[in-house]
Image 1: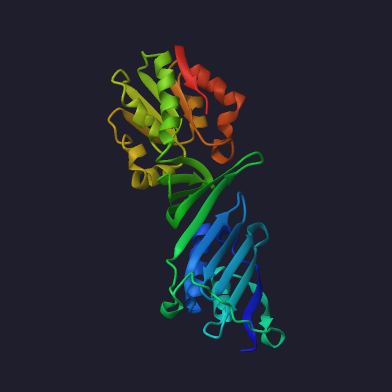
Image 2: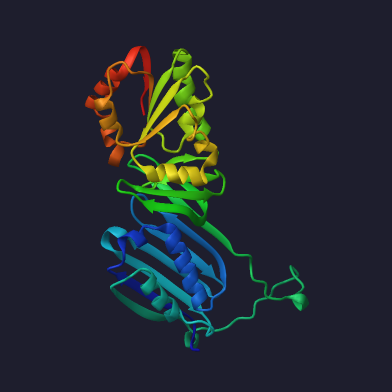
Length: 331
């Protein structure tokens, strides 16, 4: 060995765009690439940038593996830095090229720390430790994986445990559930945070209890959206409510909530609930005048299938469906 380490600068082209925007997958594959090469993993930190891109590093006892992705270009830049002769970065290279489904890969290997140009110095450790009992201890492996919900004005990053609990791409959107460090399970749609177990009550209680105080004689309720079930859970607390019609466009959201968010979805089988899987815009267009005492718009941001819920024509239909003195809550 004529150098302290080997640094391989990698470029992967023609990768799967979906994979390059999938932080849990990239984190597990980067860790697997390190293990495949025989490295000892110390920690990993990975972060998703909304709407596109992942950055991360796997710290190994022999140095590190790092990555940044550009899904919109189907391109990933990877650094593979290893020290010593015990592992080869080229094993990780081959593993990652296959994992990212790259059509083409290129790499340059640089020997870092040429020993012929260096002079080793003895370092005095002092009395901070008993050198007679020194032994190499491998630190406990830790993971730090983040998902970010970001627009042009604000970014919200939440750390999760690394293993995604649920992911399914419906005809409308990508639905995911993560197990976060501090907020319990979290539901996201197209990487936008919909709710977390720890703080969802602040949203759902305000969404339901405020209009119920304004109009305590509510008997028939329409909920548009709300596939996580939180709004329905709050509504069934009121004995005076006779019927709740919930219209959710995406069955996948409901299925994810039933399986992983039972504290929200616990009322989705309530006898007062009429659950319909259809477009809320179409439903209010065909609904008779003066049908409901309360209409709750429990939708996500004005993108994708929710975009139509932010139009004047939609609210004209909502207004038509309300009885005299009835209330509607905006999204």
